[in-house]
Length: 144
Image (cartoon, rainbow, N blue to C red; front, side, top):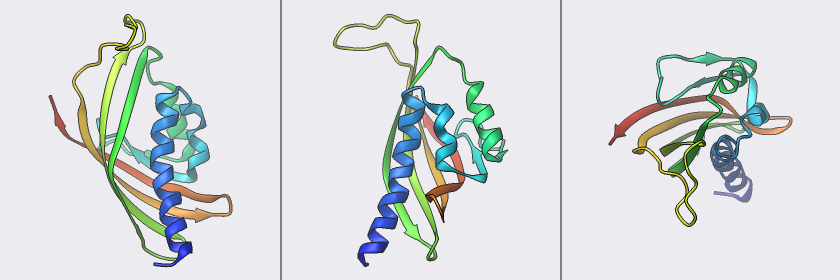
């Protein structure tokens, strides 16, 4: 594997981490920067509902309850280049949710619900602005 291929793989891996970080930090309104205009998206909790287009994806995230606090842990990230400007990825996600209105206990944080474990299957494409998500499909696999 050459240096460019390693850089491309790292760029795609970084998109996975950045997507979660923006949601968890309350910046989901900026997710459009990580998506192609014609991107598709399905949440792990609702994998049969595919949202089509960057604007529709952003609108769906805007409807997310404001009191919801999340922490996504992305694990076992695997990226495979499928062409000069395309790649695919698979990863595992563990999601914890809490209510922002609940007490913030010093040294412990908020009480979270049981984790949800799932997978992401991603398609990436290189654009003039860099690598972006073309398709992001989630599937829940376990819950407590």
